[in-house]
Image 1 (tube, rainbow, N blue to C red):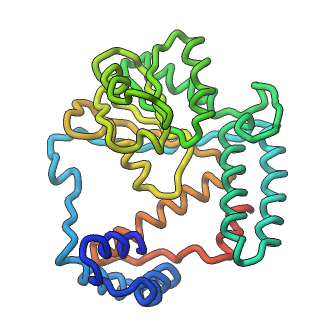
Image 2: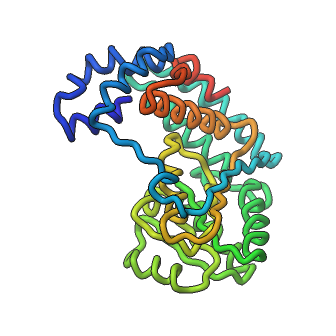
Amino acid sequence: MLDFWSIMEFALPGYLGPRKPFLERFEKPLRKGGDPALARRLARKLKPVVLRRLKKEVAKDLPDRIEQVRYCDLAPKQQTIYSQLLQESRSQVEAADDGRKRMVALTALLRLRQACCDLRLLPGLQVEDKDAGVKLDDLQNLLAEAIAGGHRVLVFSQFVQLLQGIVPILLENHWDYCYLDGSTKKRGEVVERFQEGDAPVFLISLKAGGVGLNLTAADTVIHLDPWWNPAVEAQATDRAHRIGQKNVVTSYKFITRGTVEEKILALQDEKKKMMEAVIDGGGVLVPGLEEEELLDLFS
């Protein structure tokens, strides 16, 4: 909800009142109690100044978008190290004072998310390739299937090191590719090469290429790791699912079972429901994330 307040304060200063009263009147109650009446009240307040148009309403000829969650399991070595990290992380978060708890939690969650993707992302840890994880193996299988079917693929990750780890797989299989992260020079030329060429795979850093690119040459999108904000992933998928796309777009989200990634997926669903309830003026809001629930991320 504070995202709404920040946008409105920029566009129409004072419309939703000062930040602190808005926090007490709307943000905290909506996150804690899911009050439908309060959601409708805020929706009425926003209605004169917020115009919502769904993509299917303004781009009626746009092909469908199919979203699939693709689950994988931790490899044995990966499971052992993840469990150790989880135990250490929980202890660190519980021991942290209130002023540092959030920062400690975010750092711990980063390490857990890295362990879910590939153990080689963890600093200072030496593991054999076969023990590092299964996501890249699953990715290779999915890429082989997609490329054999004549599809072109965007692969997004928040971890540049993970994207770089995919390159040897592509070379081994003789799959041409394009690559873009925050250090890429001449982004426009890279995008044009993909759009006008025939490289079947485009590796993209989520932060560097999640917005502002037109990549309709692809009709398959793969998210290797989930992000808290579902809108960020949706914007990345929309690099392919936009005006000019002729094919149905399939978006795959890789999630490791029994880990913090599943909990992030649940948080994404909560955020979607909350935003829809406020914008549409109806629906029951799901409860917010209390401290106990935050600690539950490490269970």
